[in-house]
Amino acid sequence: MNVTAVIPARGGSKGIPGKNVAEVGGIPLVARAVRACRDAAHVTRVVVSTDDGAIAAAARAAGAEVVERPAELGSDLASSESALAHALDRLEEGQAPPVDVLVFVQCTSPFLTAEEVDACVLAVLRDGADCSFTAAPFHGFLWSAAPDAGPGHRADGVNHDSSFRPRRQDRTPEYLETGSVYAMRADGFRAHGHRFFGRVQLVPTAPERAIEIDEPGDLARARALAPLLDAPPPGGVPAARQNPAAPSPPRTPQYPRKEL
Image (cartoon, rainbow, N blue to C red):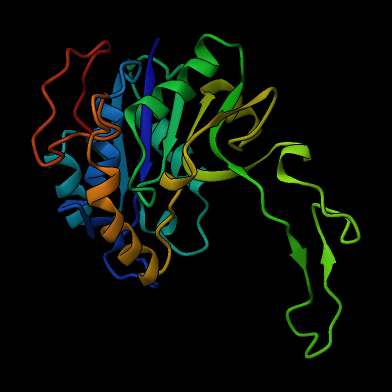
């Protein structure tokens, strides 16, 4: 099976300039994503889609192939799906074998592990899902309110009846999408044009690693947590590479290589 991970990483971030090459634990975010994918046992190819030279250089240094993304797909208005579709078109040009499973990874989730990538892939390959994604257990009470309603505006419960406050253990389990990794049948993605279709399966992940870097405060928090979340648990298998700066060992490709 051709299981290809695509990491879209544009260069025009406004909230954090140069975000995708910002370092967490001394490693650029894009390199952390690449290495999580390269260390996954069921991923056969790792590709970064970018319009930025610095991101491309960091991706290649971490062991990924690079697909050059056109400028129109690197704007604030371009969807992740458009970058994925463009990468698929480039990767399947000529005599290249078609992608069977597409893995969409976002490098703004710095604590993604190879085990989570594999779990999403296996949900498709082994469990019969059409698509899968990581999600963290969530127990919060959600409320909605009009943003411009002013003082004294009404707030409404979203996932609960505000007059009834059940204990956490008595509530129906809920999960928060982490945004870190999605796996999907490539033909289904092409047919539907979206990452969710058919039978959707979630892959539970640890809430403490469900960090998305969108604002400067997120980056500062991730950097503070890196020494804890990158370290191996006592007597266990590391949740992330013990030395993420070390290059991953070369892997034997399971598909014909071609220069992009």
